[in-house]
Image 1 (cartoon, rainbow, N blue to C red):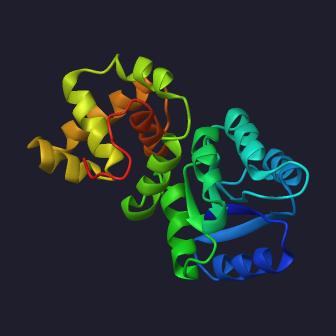
Image 2 (cartoon, helix red, strand yellow):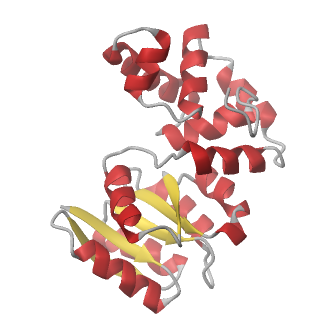
Length: 220
């Protein structure tokens, strides 16, 4: 059973998401929070698998709440909720440790899928949306030096793997692109995560953009 906490300052949004998620056999909403501080408190009390975190809330906002949750409870995954008019917060959310993000106006079926993906330990990384956003906002952040420093520790093959991760490829797709076994690709991905000090694909993508391995707005 996947346990979820929903953090959003709009009661109707929380209730709508709860109704959809509780209707699933494998998902149970265990708590609701109207702001970031309450979300952190619920994580301490309930230890959910996933937190659906709105970006803008009164008091402690979603970015700071995400940072505190990820720093304290590494096993809890945070899925940021955003809208197109606040895209600039997506990059900050990924850097805070979120495992991905979901647009608030996405179909409710996407919400269910996103919770399952994140709970399984994967990053919610859709190349058509996430890559464009991360690329755009990395361009406006002076973080390239930090990214380059971490990437310098990778081997040539691991650097290739990081580029493919940043393009949104799965382990199987990375294996196909590099003509190697899927298990070998999985091992490379694991070593990349270890060397970069990241825990999932979302954070690895940020480092790849920061280091200039991927040009914003391009596919290579």
